[in-house]
Image (cartoon, rainbow, N blue to C red; front, top):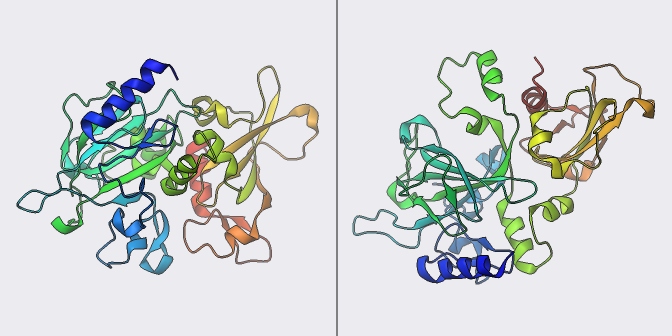
Length: 339
């Protein structure tokens, strides 16, 4: 990164309050400095009404482990006289605003903003939800820097009420499964309008932000691509198709070798424990693989990771041999357009 860019980010840190994480120019999304100072999670995680701090973390943390939470819920450090949160919400890296949902009643996310970090490889997105207010100038297509104010923390939502004392930022880091989500949505006949295009929550898969931030802070990795390589594959699945899905075109850094000029017949896909297709290996006709177009099969899996999984299963582990879960099948339908 150029020296002037580093100076700009440091200036933003001084003027507007966000905290720089190590040397990766990654910003914490709220003014709370507890994580950077190494304090316990109860100082920055907002629990559910259960009061259990871990319920605000990512993973199988709700309803006794049976319900998945695809984000970190971050608590406020500043409130007004009425008890409403006042914390500014910051973009964690430079990027482009790709979605703004300004009407609280249009999503269970409430008001939310999605920023795609197109200067990164892969060009992942971050999502900031339950906002009380969208920041000035934050609209689709706007460029933002690390530390740019996206809005104000709040408790907006649709379909349920977040009490004042549980105002928080719902923060996700992830990927879009397909550029043609509307086709999948229409096939399901949900009976309601998709108001969010490809940035509908059903079209996004996420990684756990906290260990990523911890890895950056410790210096073990410099970026998300390096971090993804440290996440073990829970399952490897082969999909027989000559198609190059939009997921591959959008995130070429996740592809292990070039497929240009080759006769593609399949993809070997490594999935994380929570269903992120983190690694793609193209397979070619001259490799002599058996299988027909449309075949999907499990190549390998990690019993250690999957047998204790209580939600968001990549594979079904109950039988003699593992089978592909309905959730993974749904993801493959979105990615490849399968019916």
